[in-house]
Length: 129
Image 1 (tube, one colour):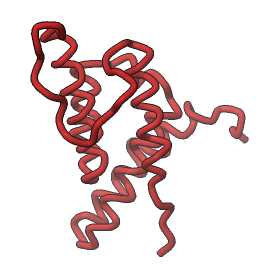
Image 2 (cartoon, rainbow, N blue to C red; image 1 turned 180 degrees about the vertical axis):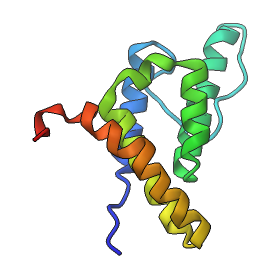
Image 3 (cartoon, helix red, strand yellow; image 1 turned 60 degrees about the horizontal axis):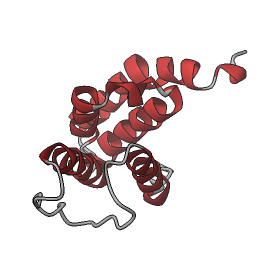
Image 4 (cartoon, one colour; image 1 turned 30 degrees about the vertical axis):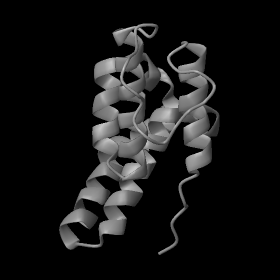
């Protein structure tokens, strides 16, 4: 089976660009958890950076459902981007197939039918036939 590798750099860049535009992080983005807030950094900013870090780590670990749950809880408007949502569903499908069990394969097919395919129609309407 041929699977498309995840372009982590593109996903990282998307998350980092968004976080920078919202002034949630500074230009130096670390792969370790953000340091605890100092007196000059608000706890709200720290919390936002921690959430971004958790989303990134979930994506890297292949825990797409956790990443999507975090996005729904903390920044649901991000999932209004149909193409990003499609890519997340596609990655979930790939991660389920990678697990290799019959149960996970069945879950991947269910994901394809209930989430990925319908989302593709919204993400790429210009390709409708």
